[in-house]
Length: 209
Image 1 (tube, rainbow, N blue to C red):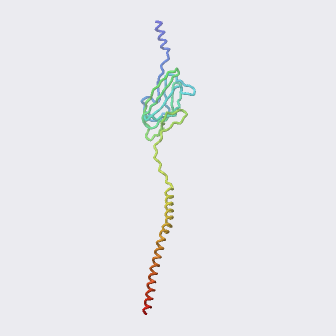
Image 2 (tube, helix red, strand yellow):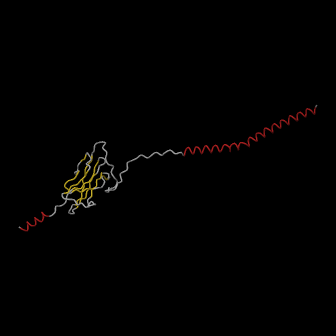
Image 3 (cartoon, rainbow, N blue to C red):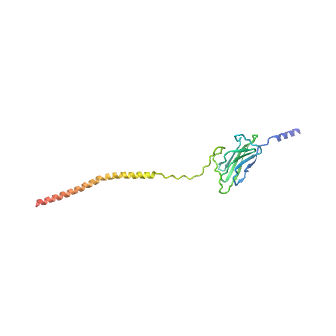
């Protein structure tokens, strides 16, 4: 009898198994507004080391795998929390890994949906997991390609073409000069023949007389 009581007392004195007893939001919830803070509550104190997360981790992601929040966690007794703003409407997952003060690790996920009012704006999300104190790489928004700016190459080309045309004109005039000279010489030759013919006719008439 005494042995049974001693065994029962030993079992009762064993530390309880660390487990999650609450979360914000709860698994399966549908949020219509930004909660601002996401948290998980344990049934015992959470390990908190100065200057480190003490093995604790928490990430908030959407269905596309984008990350939200700055990666900075807060431990307050039995609660581990993360400040973050959600993005577009859709399904989200809060993934956690928590180490209790006695060294027992607990991990799990909280799945929930976000259905804000139409026109509500949210955070853009990040492609990589955020690290506390470091800027995360946000998902780039789609942008339209910029139209190419007009350059002054066309006017310059036109000016060059104009200068080229002006340079060709003297060459063309020089090419026409031989033809003009030949024409003048031909006219002079015809006039000389006519004068010679007239002069010869006059002499013939004088000789006959």
